[in-house]
Length: 226
View 1 (spheres, helix red, strand yellow):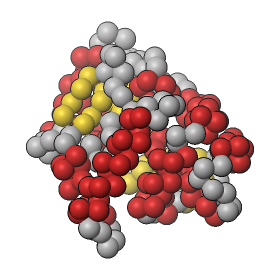
View 2 (view 1 turned 180 degrees about the vertical axis):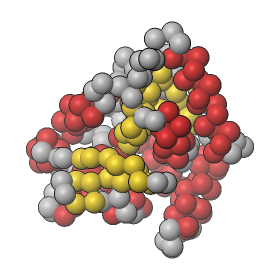
View 3 (view 1 turned 60 degrees about the horizontal axis):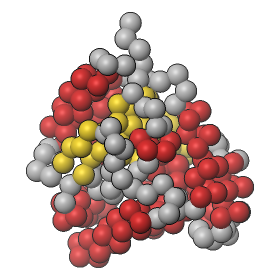
């Protein structure tokens, strides 16, 4: 029987990581580990506890007690904190901003490393985020970096949020995405960048099924060497 791999997929916001990783995990029969959802969950719980997204020590304490679980439910990857499902709550636009802010703090990232690695113990995991291949799982069996133009990524994010019934503006979405790119790429701790041994895939102009096929091909090729 082929060994169950740890597959790390990184890339900027709107590159299609979440959708592609979800389908890839389903095709492989793997667990989907959405690291961004963990930071979103932390931002959500922090707000509800009145903790500022810039308060590193309090956020780290909260992070160490965070109990996050993922569960596949048809087309959705459901996220729970303790016994409470937060799948929809963490996908509000401001939680994306919150995740970006709390993830820039060294003490928060360190506090969540153990949780993420524990969730991936034993392999059979597709992990997606912004530093999964460089920091969280530096020894992942397969590392992939998805990207696309800022305009394409903003269009996807705009259509996704509009599809959920949110009042959104494309230009504002594009500005927020570019600002987040700059913050993620220039932060002192775990900046957004491809791992040296990551396979780069530009998803601009590719349909979701096409992206997933590219991922499967990459996993087949890289997986054979591990």
